[in-house]
Image 1 (cartoon, protein in one colour):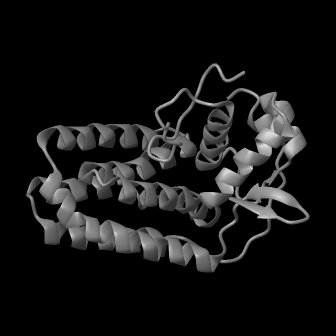
Image 2 (image 1 turned 60 degrees about the vertical axis):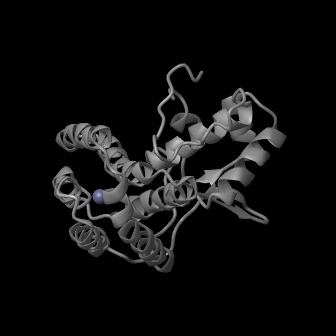
Length: 241
Ligand SMILES: [Zn+2]
């Protein structure tokens, strides 16, 4: 088990320096399964089953589920146990409003802090996104496109802001999983190449404006209406992760 580890860079758990605990590893794997949409919003997270899957006690699983709930990607119900968070239409709108507040305000900071190495990292990332878009793997594509936004925040280097944005991007990923239109992908490498253009020109207003348009476009392309919750087989989700 857990030989191959897929991580969702940008939304993975930050190791706190010391050796990784079993809880941190399980957190990371469940978080990645949610961000990569192997576990869909609304899926029940049964403690016994997860304990079996990861070979640990229910107590450990419970502690992981509490951490995930704290980060808003899992919801704890008093009687029904835990489930992958299922953002409502209102929450979806709030997530995008919060993203606008943070990501647009970050634009001048990005332009101020960017250097050649960071620009190179962004351009390299665009290649990964293009690869994702060409593949049939929507999960990979979505992960790459979300990572771009965290990469931008990382340029500024404010760890509090990066932490906020990671949480927002994990929730944004849930929102996209539920509400995206299958034929549209507005958080694309083309849109991101356009953002890079303004960074290269060291144009803070241009970048802020382009970011605002980009986020409005993504939100505008979602189909926001209430949906039913799916049922998920946890053993299958983690069978080969
Ligand atoms: Zn984007």
